[in-house]
Image (cartoon, rainbow, N blue to C red; front, side, top):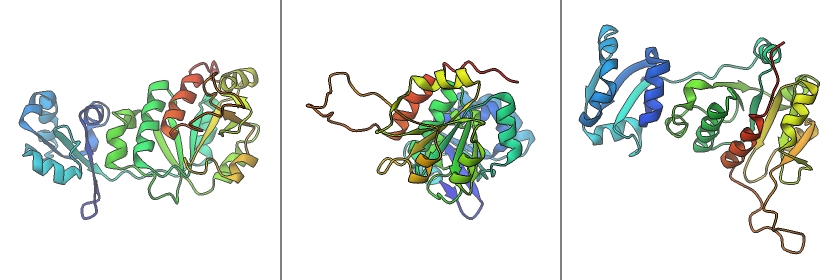
Length: 264
């Protein structure tokens, strides 16, 4: 939960806070925990004291007020509200030089889905996530931090003003894959196409209700789909047309582990 008066964000959930403490303890501005979590973070307290950062054990009810959720798991770390940097050519040039793939979210406006996608991206080693700047719901929130289960510390989240401009600028430089239930390219070909052309992937995940937008379709090199059960056929249409976007992301990123592109 964001504190609009102090411009702070509550990071809660044991795994999320543990990763924050491990990777970016300097971000912590205040730290609160239940008594039974004291030993889990005892090594942190000395550095907090040296920086004169407040920390204390408080009742469960106070943790709920700080975090805005009952799912705090006994620990809340307050940090400054993350500012999502704007994606620029220096950053994308770095991707191209190091052959790094990226995920682009097209109107994915649910914080829990964002957190789950980030968790999968961190697990499969895809560290670049891009979201449209005007999507207020798709931002770094307490929920997305918690659901990411520590993955937030291992990815870079960028914002862009125009999806169309980004896709156009990556034409011929990255292979642009749009996810679409009507796509004619199986996801197994993502790694094959990238490895063959020695280019990284830019994977676009769309809104659950409407999928990727028409402008995305026009600017993709391939539209990929996740094959459904082999038992389905034209006479027996599948019961469920598509997966949750976070589930789909995990399956697609699993395929991306086969990328064998090396740096220039």
